Image (cartoon, rainbow over all chains, first blue to last red; front, side, top):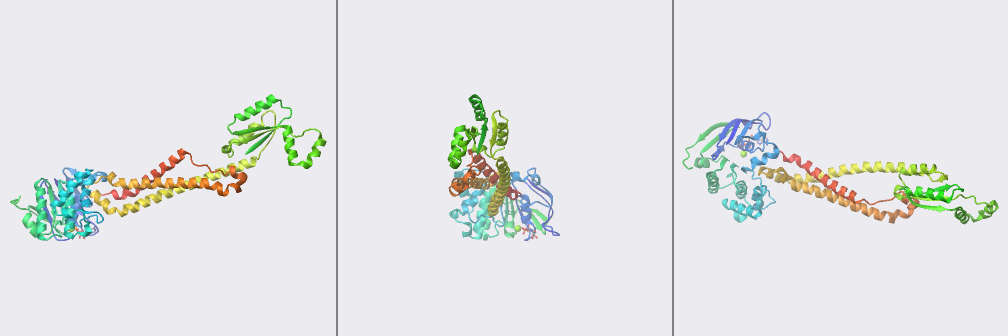
Length: 226
Length: 241
Ligand SMILES: Nc1ncnc2c1ncn2[C@@H]1O[C@H](COP(=O)(O)OP(=O)(O)O)[C@@H](O)[C@H]1O
Ligand SMILES: [Mg+2]
């Protein structure tokens, strides 16, 4: 369970990127955070995986106070998460394979196991033919799928995806969200930031609406498609 | 260096033997040669043949017998020599001692100065190498900053991230000390070839000794430590958040 209590975030005075956000996401939920650009979606996600610290507030994940975790133990939290960054954050001088494998290398898995799982993840995002290409040889949409493969390859319990369909054409976007939905069905909690109304209309089960850093609404749709 | 101990003419052979034995005990002594009155006179005549008639007129042999002591080269600059000479003076049958104490003391203070300069330069170089290594590592850390942040975000432990950099630092440090040892060896083997002859009598004073094996090991080890510390410190900043 992910619990946020009265989260405030200020990058620079006097603007608040987030203002008094409180929300709860239970294990196994499939939810969206939406809102116009600049409303604080990315900031909220970064606070959840603790890339940045909130100015005020508390975050509890599975009973653990995230802000109290010392820097050298933060890896325990991150190993449970798969993160798709809005800006991909790929290593452009490394091949697609190595970009995805990095999530597994840090776990110390065998080369054979890494190969198997990386291939599997790349196949799920339909990019296994480009395994030995470099990211700069790929289109934005393909790079985005490399980022997605890296996030799902270690079968995390929590997936955090920041605009994962921002560069994909509608068909592929639906395919990718379906993939997340499938992973969610296998038990993972999935949190997706998007401003794509079509996707929310189609997949939305639980949606948080952000506007200028404030949580202005929460909608829970009947989980007919679950 | 050599010390000449002039002996009493009336010393019995036993007394002389005892004295010689006593001197030999000292670890400072490398060699000891007995020069009889006759040998001393012969040497003198060889050196100054013009004065031979003068000696013949004298009728007796004015040269006292002596012991010529060679001090171990490795102690020739030691303060032990001074106390050794003092104790020699007090021995029975010793008339006089010839040596250049002035030199001994001057060399000693020179030695202290050289040591102090060496220590100063040594610590300066140590700091410099620490600085250089940590900067080299910092450069490669900054180059791979993106990768480090990704590694942290996908759940790498700090040690996993540190390992390659720390290894790089240690290898740099060890390589550095190996190169230093190599240069030192080169200098030691070339120095005498170039200036050895012009040094003449000073050769003994300006001896260059190669490092002992334990010094070599310490040097390599501290090179590794410097590399380790240098890389560790330049990484710390990047292992937050
Ligand atoms: N690193 C930063 N420094 C300063 N301001 C920032 C930074 N990141 C985001 N912001 C500001 O915080 C607000 C929220 O940004 P963001 O979380 O990226 O919104 P979204 O992802 O919804 O587009 C915006 O006004 C943005 O300009
Ligand atoms: Mg954003």
